[in-house]
Length: 70
Image 1 (spheres, rainbow, N blue to C red):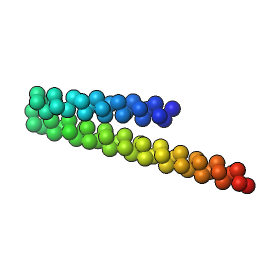
Image 2: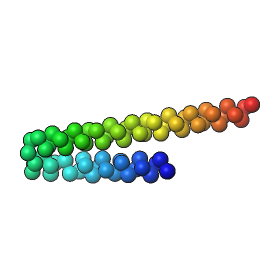
Image 3: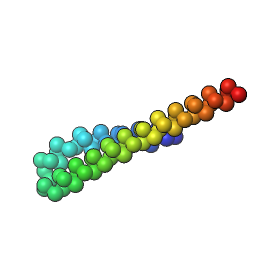
Image 4: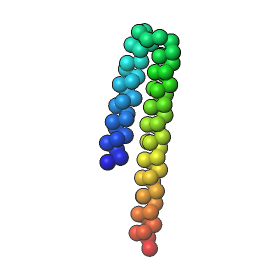
């Protein structure tokens, strides 16, 4: 289930990146700055979730391999 949410957030980040040039052309400077902060935050959040997912999976693999050796 975690991968579904991660994929949805990844799609959101891509959509935001696609609309970024439009926002820069049409919006005021402060709104463009706000958009950039939201975009950076979304990308950083997705990256943190990916890292957490990889750490959880590696921990599960270590736990599974340790249990099979006993």
